[in-house]
Length: 186
Image (cartoon, rainbow, N blue to C red):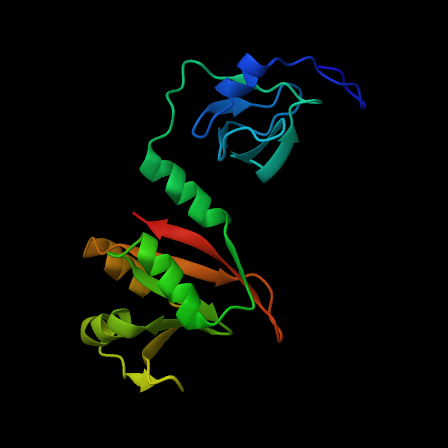
């Protein structure tokens, strides 16, 4: 690899090894292990590194080191990693809920909204029964309940019950907040 803008010589056969689920590391920067999230396209790969998160690497300039002693991640692990990279920008709670629920039908979904986590549909009904919370209705007639974001006990209770859940955190507040999955248990 050539630092400072030089191109790498990488052949087609090497790019085929940079497929989805491959465990790699950056050749010159300690970003920790990385998981290739998509097969190489136009000599570019998307990688989720342990220490720095999502990076797009040009294989023309960086030749990642494949960690051959590491097995490929499973399809479920890969979907979990990809799901955590998705950012919901200015989307309705119902759409966020439905998108996540389609991928994680057994998980309760908590969506950060200001100083509360909103819980919708059947998840609201279940949380109402588990934690004695009142059910409200969204304008679309959707059942909803909530818990304060500062609560810690609910996560402990759900873990003790071995009840899978997902926390969707609010990254920016204001008129058009961004949200992202911050935790998937288990």
